[in-house]
Length: 255
Image (cartoon, rainbow, N blue to C red; front, side, top):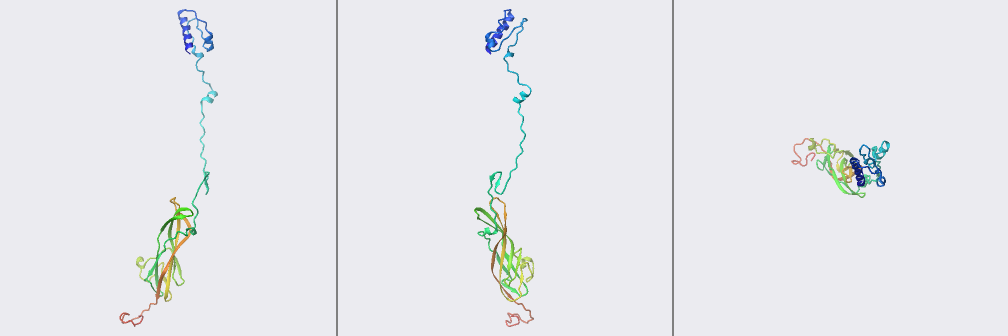
């Protein structure tokens, strides 16, 4: 480029000073395609046009080289999940649990009492009261760390004379219900004959499990816990008009 500029300057100066112009195309200039001529009027011809940058391609050729067509957005593909796989990856899910699997998780036994305490009257309601509460037990189940929740769902009373009854409540005392003694309640029972009767109760617990996810999975069936050993002595009640109480006359009627 330096040689081209010097040669062009010399040609232009010769034209101005009236010096005859050198050969318009020397071998050196021809080798680099920088030949030039000077007009008779002395106007210089720009020699840069012959060695400048080539003009950019036009039309489709320019678009092909210089323009990028934006790609169309690709819609996300739905992820398919099954019990074992999700999106092509193996998914480990906690096992299904039945009540039989909870054999090592036993809720506490309910309490059992009645009123009058240990006694009853033939033909009159004897009130029986059981109590159980919600419980949480932790441990290992089928190889998983688990929390088991037990919620009382039903109470099955065995009154000892062949009669049974199921209730959704464990019962309440007469005072708690605001009732008089020897009145019927949801868990009371009236005996027909004198005798001593062993009473028992079985609580049906609804179970659910949490394998650490924070959500409870219900377990089909019930887990039960029982209590017994509460005996009721049922007596006959007779009324008589007497002049003295049994304390005053232990041998009197009904004493």
